[in-house]
Image (cartoon, rainbow over all chains, first blue to last red):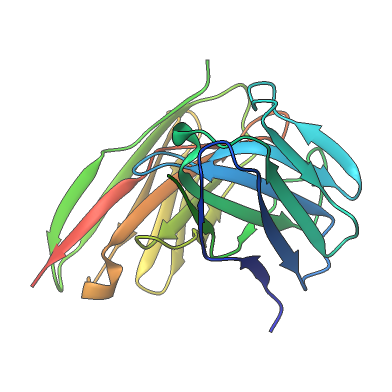
Length: 116
Length: 109
């Protein structure tokens, strides 16, 4: 089945220790998104890629970086996690980029990050 | 600024009907989505409205009034598995998706 996969599902890291979350998709979608979601809050868009074009949201901290080496994979790097970065991190994909229509986003199961 | 408002929490009884409202103020409008999110899981797509009126999909229906900046999600014949958060999201004039914080729906037997 075509899908969005995130690994790991649960990640524990130490305060200040870099961590990388991964996302892969078999949908062959052009657009990939990373969201941060804290309990009972709306998902907050961190960045998105249209193909290899990177789009950073204005209020995404520099502590968060992303890489998309190919269509299928996308990584979220948190360079120095703080306690406030503990959250669910959601990867999503959509077929078309912004400006070409409103598309359903397909989400992976998420990675729950705990910072000790 | 851009804003999506939904009730924080609602409670309903198994077998009953519940309506979850969403109001929005955004810069432009290019469609409204409803997503379901079970605790600890990712959102899953339920419905998309871009024209005024009611879209029906089995037990779930979604309504849109663009002039009022208003939508609702109607769930019929409630089942225990419908206990989840329901997120309203609007695509603005730049095709950016603006999310509401979600409505937590609790179903009681």
